[in-house]
Picture (cartoon, rainbow, N blue to C red):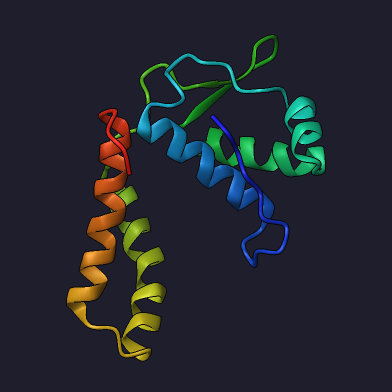
Length: 133
């Protein structure tokens, strides 16, 4: 899996890293039980601070995507991603609401909003099933 960091983005680097690893797990590019690069190795490869990688790994651990082993380091959770439970749905609604508000404020139609959501969802499913985007 190739991780790309945009140093000019408004999105913090640890969020970019967290999001890309979650996407890799969701699409199956990162398999359950697969070891992630060490904090130092990934920081060096990406040219970023090791504390940034450590923060991303901690978020992934707290979210149930990876396990942190003393000897093995960060490993993709053996069962894959945690299920979409009520807590996840509540968080999803909280995080989507500001984006929906901005879309409404910018005059985006509900149809376009849903089309963009559907497109992103379908692209990830296609990658997971071995299709192309």
